[in-house]
Image (cartoon, rainbow, N blue to C red; front, side, top):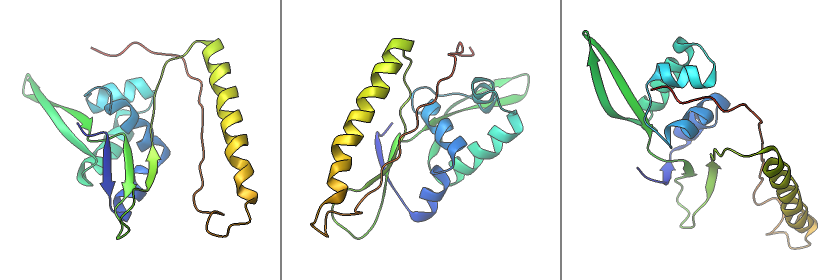
Length: 154
């Protein structure tokens, strides 16, 4: 698997969907079937299958392996990357989306939230920069969701 992947504008639109981002986050860590992803995210299998098929069609996911059980083929998908950058004519690297998933204790979550707030405050002071080239160059949004950890389906 690759950690970072150049994407087209069309692919970027596909990976920017919140549910698809969650799917990519899961499948960057472990190959799973659509049914396993649906269980893990507590969504319907049909909905997850639709989003997985879209990600697969746009080259974001690939098939790791298949299992055939009583004539039914289970496809195990994996994410080719967890970070994406827009492939433009510019020569520099411009990451546009990163998905991370980590399990934390309540205390670790509180500490992480405080540290992120401190970092944003530090870098946010640069927003008022008088250098026009520095202003509004990039926007960053960070979302921390607290969810109970579910056992991985076997």
